Length: 281
Image (cartoon, rainbow, N blue to C red):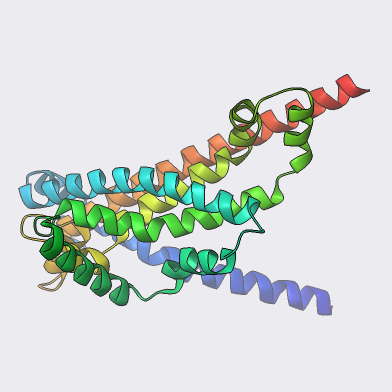
C-alpha cells in the first residue's frame, strides 16, 4: 500500500513537472498560428505571421548573424574545450593543475553580468593598447561565446575520458600503433559522442545568450535574442511566437539527430567489443 502511494506521488510529481515545463511551450506554438493580432485571444487558424516573419528584414538579419556566430563559436569551443578536457583528464601530475582546472571551470559559475562586463573592459583596454579589435561587433561576440562555451565542452570531454577504459589505448600501443594512430582509431571514436554533445551545447548557449552579447556587441551587430528582447519590451507580437516556434523546431531536430548519432555510435562500439571478444575466444 505504501509502495503504491509512493508511486502515485512520484507519478503526480512527474506529470506536474512536465506540465509546468511543456504547456507554456505548447501554448506558444499554438498561438503562433493565431489569426488575431492579440497573442492571448484566439481568432482562428492562420499561418500569416510566418509570412510576416520572413518579410521582417531585421529579424532575418539578426537570425543569420546569430547562426553564423553560433556555428563559429561552437567549432572553436569544441577544439579548445577538448584540449582542456584532455589536460584535466590525462595530465594529473603537472604543477598548477588545480589552478588550471579552477580557471577552466570558472565560466560555469561566473555570473553572466560579471563575464560580460569583464570582457567589455578587456576589449576596450586591448583596443587602446594594440588597436584591435576595432570597436565591438561580430568578432568580440564570437570570442566571448567561445570563452564561456569551451568550459562546458571541457567538462563533457573530461567526463567521457574518465569513463574510458585506458587498456584499449594500451593494447593498441602494445600492438605497435603510434600515438597519432591510437588517437584517431581508438580515442577519437570513443569521445565522439562527447564532442557532438559539446558542440550542440555550445551552439545552443551561443544562440541563447543575451546578457554577454549585450555588453560586447556594437552598432549593427544585434543578435537574435537582443532583437527579440527589444521587441518584447514593447509587447509580445504574434510573429515572435512564430519565430520561437521555428527555433524550437530547429533545436528539436538537432537533438533528434544527436540522439540517433549517439545510438548508432553505441551500437557500433558494442558490435566491435563483441567482435573482439569472439576473436579472443
